[in-house]
Image (tube, rainbow, N blue to C red; front, side):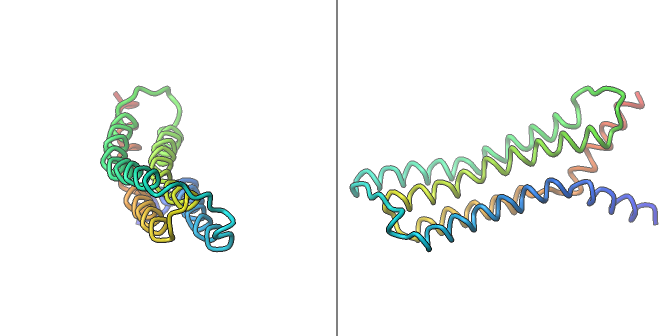
Length: 163
C-alpha cells in the first residue's frame, strides 16, 4: 500500500517535466500546422545544390543528436545521484535536478524538429518536414520523464544525506 502511495507521489512530482514534454510536442505540431497553412508564403527557396547540402548536414546532425543526447542524459542522471547536496529535502533537490535533465534532453531533441521547419522554409517539401518532426517526436518519447530514473535519484540523495 505504501509503495503505491509513494509511486503516485513520484508521478505527481513529475508533472512539470511532463508539461515540458507536452509543450515540445505542441511546438512540433505547430511547425506542421504553420507549414500547411502558410505553405508557399513561408518558403524562401534556396538553389537545389545548397538545399541538398543543408539537408544532408541536418540529417547528419539529427543522427548524431540521438546518441549524444543519450550520453548527456546518462551523465546528468549519474551527476544527479552523486553530486553533493545541502541538508535540504532529497525530494526537492531530486526534483530540480531531474527537471534540468529533462529540459536539456527535450531541448536537444526539439532541435531536430526545428531542422524540418528550416528545410521547409528553404524550399524542401513536406516529406523532410515530416521525417525530421517524426524523429523529434520519437526522441521526445525515448527521453521522456521516467518514474524509475527519478526514484533512483531520490534514493541516492537520501543515502548521501544519511552518511
